[in-house]
Length: 457
Figure 1 (cartoon, one colour):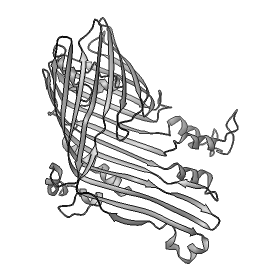
Figure 2 (cartoon, rainbow, N blue to C red):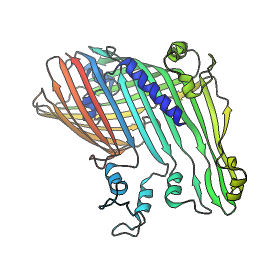
Figure 3 (cartoon, helix red, strand yellow):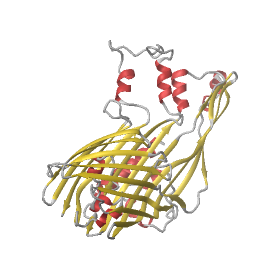
Figure 4 (spheres, one colour):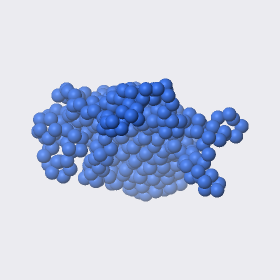
C-alpha cells in the first residue's frame, strides 16, 4: 500500500513538472476564497464565470507562472506537538498519565479526545493550470490545468490500542479511507452581459489521469480471553484513464452603488468514466509507460485492454494466542489478498460546490467581501458543511494591494489568510498564505500557499 501511495504521488509530481506550473490566483487565496463576486478575467474561472462580463474592469489576462499547494490534517497542530512530543521543561518525556490542571482528565485521554471519531486524516492537494493555455479575452476564456488530491486516514482504534493497550473484551474499529485523484481539465468559459446583471458558464473536458481509493472497509480487532480476534477488511480500487465532463454556472449583478452580489454552482454537472480504453491517457499508455510504469505502480495488469483493478484485503484472526503463535508463527497477522471483479467502466461523480457572495467598495480605499459556500457532495475537495468567509483588500496604493481574510465552518473549522501583490501597468504578481484549522501558525493544522504571475490589460 505504501509503495502504491508513493508511486501515485511521484506520478502526480512527474505530470506537474511535465506541464509546468501555471495560474492559480493568489489574490483569491489571500482573500480566504471570498472571491465569488470580485474575481476577474481568468481568475474568475473556478469561482464564477459570470465575472467575465466585466470587460470594462479587465479585457485581457493570461498566465505566466502560478501554483497553489496545500497540506493539512485533522488533529495535530504545532502547539500540540510542542506540548506533548518535544519533552517537558527539562527535556524528559512528557507524563501523559498525569491529570490536566483543573480537570480529572489525563493528558492521554485529552489527546485521544482530539482525534475525530472517523480517524486521523491527512490531506494533500496541488492545483496547477497549464502555462500559455489560460487566457481570457473580452467575455470569453480558455483555461486548462491539473488537479491532484490525496486524503488518507487511520482508524481511531489504532491510536487507542497504542495509547491504552488492547484491553480484554474491547473491540476497536478498523475502518480507514484513502482517496487519490489526478485529473487534467480543459475548459471554455463565456459570460453574457445584460444591463443590470451578467450570466456565465464554463464547460470543461475532464481527462482523468488516475485514481485510487478504498471504497469499502471495516471490521474490528479485539482481545478475548481465548486470544486475539479480527475480521478487518478493505477493498482497494484503482483505474487509469478517464473521460469526463463538468459544467459551472454563474450569476452576478452589476454594481448597485458600491455593492455587488453573485452566486455560482461549480460542477453542477460533473462526472468521469474511468478504466476504458477510449480516452486520451489509455491511447497514449505506451508512451507514458516508457517514462513511468503507471500500471505497475497501481498494480493493474499490463494487458493493453485492462485499465482498472480492485483487490480485497482481509485480516482474519480467531483465538490467536501465544501458544498458537509459537506453533505456527505465520498465522499471526496474516493478510489475505483476493482480486475481485471490476466493471469495464467506473463512473465517478465530480464534486459540486455552491457559492454565494457579496462585496462593498469604499471609494478607492478598500473592498469588503463575504462568501457563503457549501459542497453538494462530501468527498474529495467538497464538504457539505457550510462555510462563511469574510475578507478585505486595501487598494489605496494600487501598485501594492494588501489583503486578508478569515473563514469559519467547512472542513477546517477556522481559516485565516494574508496576501499582497505588486501590480504594474501590464503585469501582476501576487503571493498569499492561508492557515487551515486555526488562526495562527501555532494552532493551525494545515497550510496553503499560492503565487501567481499574470499579464493583464
